[in-house]
Length: 522
Image (tube, one colour):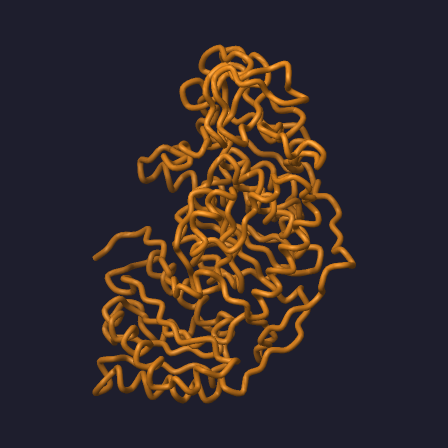
């Protein structure tokens, strides 16, 4: 990669004057493929400036076709980068996919630090600079005021759920107050029969949730004999207001549900005095995630989220991005934006450690994209990763954190985590994200403890699944859309969500957590 290529992946969205007739898009001026924005039939002519071409084969929407003839072994370029090599000669206008394109990734890669090449960012004067949030005693700001029930071990899952269910009925009058947003139990199957790093991961993840500013109070429910001992978990939570915590082991009380219900009542009385107040946008923490990507994800939804990340970074807020294996093949873009040599070294270690995790488990490092991704038009891991990292925008990478750790630096933080939607989104929440921006080309009803804004990469998904989707980024390809104005509108919507407007996952009560289990079970 050249220095220019490493620094970022600029996307050329269609000009307003030609968007109404647009059937294909050249993402970057260096690309030798186009993206079909609608299904193309054999022989169908392409619009200007590609009118010298016609589709030589049928091309599904979101898939690629060759802009020029590509020889066998030649790099195929998208986003201005190689996304693999042609496995056979490809004629101009021919469909480019798994039958004639393969990854060029294999083995390990040597990296070298060349300094930070990130562009300067500025926050537009015409955008709001505050939202209505809950300022906590430790200075952090929540976007919700909820009571969370966290259990140390899966053995008390049902007890935690019963406490939450009964609390919603028993304390209905308190919960009707505008400043209390609900009581939710976040259960999991772990906490016992775990050892070493695996147990530490569970403890750290739960500690991150307990210390989350969207939790105005927390009830921690233990069993008593589990490996994840309640006392150790509390020690891992130094950044909490102890008056807002209640904790006990079920084995040490007569009726754990009755005891839990009484504790919830005490905590809700305290929360009843909490009020929203004006907070600067720099107090926001956004977690960026993509799930079920398609050929449009990197062009619309991920690019929109990336521009939003740049806005928040420019304002001094925090942006957290994870899914380490979905950086493979594009990690050098982030390395070129490392704030300093230590951050660069931490990122190299993060990437290499995750590759070793695959190798240790005898799995291919580059076994990606998924069948759903391929059906949506993605062919190789390089292509998927280059689209996925659009969510990180162009800001300086300020911090690298490991699974279960919390983000502290303003700007862009990269978090260790797998690509799995539930595991990585939970890790983002535990890292401190008070809003999750979840882009998708295929759709999912999943939701998490933090409000989860679902952003469709294509308008068809948004129309088919309005109960899942909060925002339609497919509009970016409609006539008259301006990317900067559209991003400003989206940013205003996010501030409304941060100030209390509910997301689809909240309305449907789709909330859960998943913990990364990567060790032995006794």
